Image (cartoon, rainbow, N blue to C red):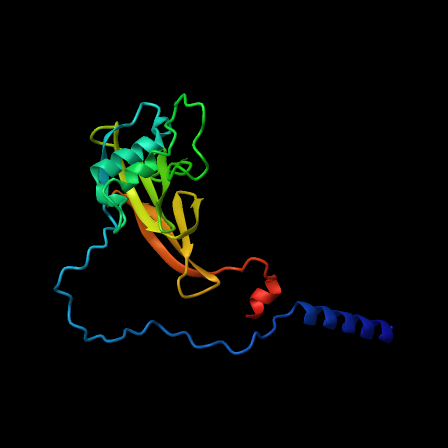
Length: 236
């Protein structure tokens, strides 16, 4: 009887140890943010305008009742380039250089027997997504402009004024690694100039106040090199 009680005591003791709380070690003291240089004078000069909120209408393009999917992306790019020549021009390009590049594009609905050669048209396959949350799709276009630079542009149908009017709500250019859609965000991934094994990622999101896609988040992200094993990448 005594042996049985002793055995039960050991078993209960073992269960209590297994399920009990254990210390995770000393916890660092929580500290609030420290403001550096609190005596900096207030800013009086106007801030530099990076053009984050710049939006422009695309003249000569009307959005059909069916929405932006009915638009010809090449015609949209050609109309914008004609209205704003500086939008797609590189410093050493002739004024008609980009228009000549568009000559290699096959217009939607064309009856030409031969499609253009791969890579001849700088306007890439379009994508469609409701980026603003209003239930209507926006047109997302990428355009190769040379020197390995690619323009990423988004266009939306106007809301309040003329529903058939097309407005550009996002424009950025970089040496792209890729572009992702996540929900209503456009994530632009580009090469890192001085940090091999990393890439820049900029998340563009719709801002209702400014009525434009704004770069909400910039980050530098390490990426695994092609052919490298996860263990090797983690050991660096």
